[in-house]
Image (cartoon, rainbow, N blue to C red):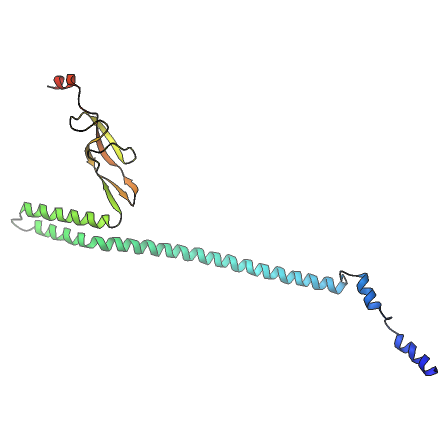
Length: 198
């Protein structure tokens, strides 16, 4: 029994039984100095990860912006190339017309027919790319499409209708490029004016 009594104090020396559980209960948040340092290190690591993601996002955005500009320039160059490719036959025809006009004894009627063919070719090529003529002779005047430069009486054209087209207008895919320059009819002249003109 003496040996048992002497052995018991040796087993109970150091941390009393249940003191670890008591310490954990006293500090439920685990706010010991080692835990605070761990939390600070974790926060720093998380902040570094967020900053790294931010830097990568900024770099990706800048690369996307540069790539978009480059693709836009390439698209514009490619689109212009397609348009010009369709106009090459028109240039060829014009060169042939000039060469024919320089020949001795060139026939004016043949030259005129050739120029008309080139004009038709040019209009076709332009139309294929969305260019449309605005030539509103006899139509009602539209200030959104036409630019009036004169108002004159006309026995054949009703009032507020286009009596003459001075310059053809053009639209591209529905968007006005240039309004048609027109003369607008004021209607038939009064009988008194007709007598005064006679």
